[in-house]
Length: 216
Image 1 (cartoon, one colour):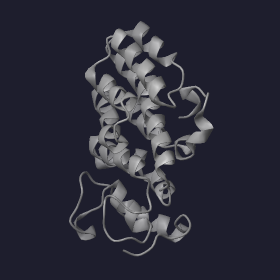
Image 2 (cartoon, one colour):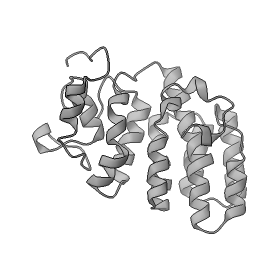
Image 3 (cartoon, helix red, strand yellow):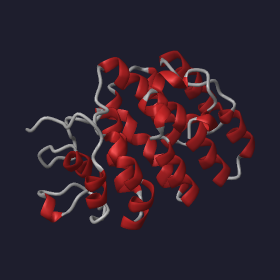
């Protein structure tokens, strides 16, 4: 495998990126197509893969799930394409990966879950979840799980919070957060899910104490 490029892709590479649609699923070769993370591998100068060495494994697991959740290539083009160059060279150590996982759990509990509850007409429960303290550790996830359970949140909300509270391997539960996006099924939900990949998730130390709305 060739080494990652030391910086974000050049303008030429970003221009080339625009020529290819982002497609659902993984592909045997680049001539067969590219999903979002396969494009990241291409931008980084790596061999064809949907799990490039240059990218954070937690972010990659989330992006793969979101890539396949979005209903069309046009949605992937709109919501994921602008973010792909930023995923190059995001891989860090275990501590950084786990902090990013808690950012994803937090976004799920305080942004996506309330949106889902609002679609079901349960606005009081949605407001309670929006008012939770930020999730930055296992104990925060445990509190959020209990609040979501008491609010009658569905399994798509409860399961990833439970896994985060139990300290399970993040890549095993982070993709499940995207199930909320599928259940919401609206443009606002897709936009919120992609918004999670903003700068504060890439540098999660900046998240502590900030409300979820400030992170999107």
